[in-house]
Length: 205
Image 1 (cartoon, rainbow, N blue to C red):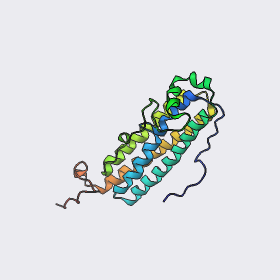
Image 2 (cartoon, rainbow, N blue to C red):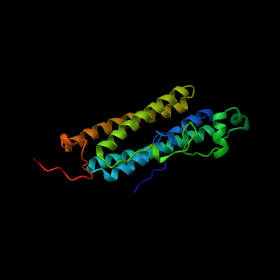
Image 3 (tube, helix red, strand yellow):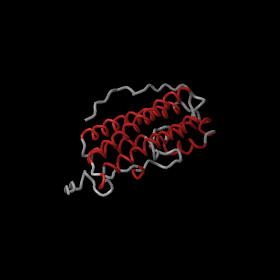
Image 4 (spheres, one colour):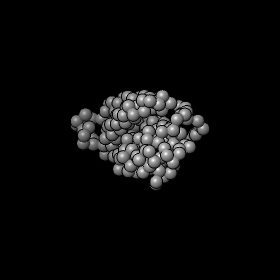
């Protein structure tokens, strides 16, 4: 069960509308490396994680990613509220989004395609899943770096994006520590051949 606190993890207060920027930032809501996929990935992987403290880590980070998804949605909403017809017409990237979703927040990539579960991985093997998680956090950090380059003229946006970027780095570090912890449980001869969440422990020779 999740306990919901009715405030954002970090405040989002954007003063200026910018539909073009919203059409780019939406990728961290529902793009291939966005927060929706991250939260579902970790909250799904936890069930087959055989080590309770790593399972708890996946739960914690997965829950936090739900909060980050909410923050990204708030950014997109605040960048597009009170748009004029002229602003929409002058931003063809957002105009295509507007045709389908008006100013609703819809999980999609900046390239326009909708969120797809194929962008996330749940294998049921601790080493495989945690390696995927390291890559996911690194890719999300790169995406936030790219957004920062494009949003450099709006400090209201970059302030929030920097916070989200920093959390990706923290998550990367936490997953790095977790994968080392999992390796300590494994017979190094069998790291790539057995799954401790599924396969029986090999007999001691």
